[in-house]
Length: 381
Image (cartoon, rainbow, N blue to C red; front, top):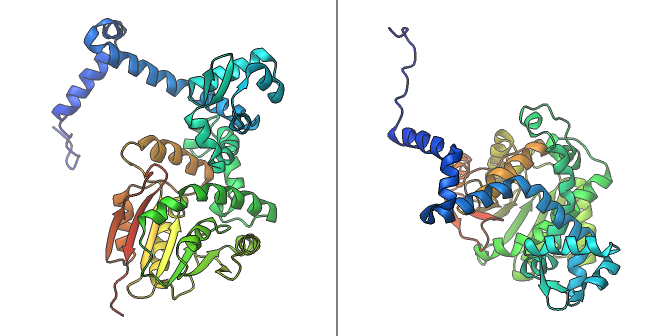
């Protein structure tokens, strides 16, 4: 007889029994050999073998990319195709190792082998040349690799302090030295430029009067806004040291009178009066409680009828699940704050913050950022 008050066992669903049987079958070496040779299953078996090997070898692929970036291979090939000997000389590598690197890069579709033992850029290498923020992130990953050297220790909360938590001091609420602000603000700015246009393509700001970008870094997003929307009043809000850097950078590009930079702590409140507020890759940097508090603060700062633009990569994005769940899941864990959230989680948080409607606007590259538009009621309370 079961104990009084004990939770009755949940009956195993048919789908779970099927999954268990299937997993036992797939794990059987004899079945694996058979599937690899049978014409109807051979393609599936080969794809699964490649996928499993890619999971094991992913670190090596990333290091091939790192070597290409550190050696400026893509910038060199942007000048035009070059011979192996010429590339070995410019890369300062022995010819055999230059060939080894070039063939590795070719296998990853970064470069293309040409006739006469020459090499040129492939599509991925050319795309990297057009997105300097990617190179910055690849170099930055050295810190992440150090934190993930023992992933189980990190998952058990035994890997603190991490290298990434030192790189992003605001994640732990620490006050940073000026050099730290300079380091992470520059990285944020370079990577922000990649998605600013995608976010703006998804948003109609023609009816807005005043946009405040919260956590705006050195102003890369608002610089893109200014180029598109000459009518908009623009305010950047970030930590005082970051806002100072934004003022200097924006002045350098001729936008000192166009974008007002204000320093403060958005956990303590936001300046009121904007009819549009943007949070571009900000919410996922925070744990649930401070993230919810930030949304409440943004709601309070908006005028009646104002809207919030929330843009960031999200968990469960179709076709990009490893980006939201694997990459950002562990990156933010190492950073010491935040987590990727599904769109439906963010919907619920926005409604709990007081927004009356929330809708998603499609972006060109949802892998990098999806956009939610939340509306504040136009009724005055």
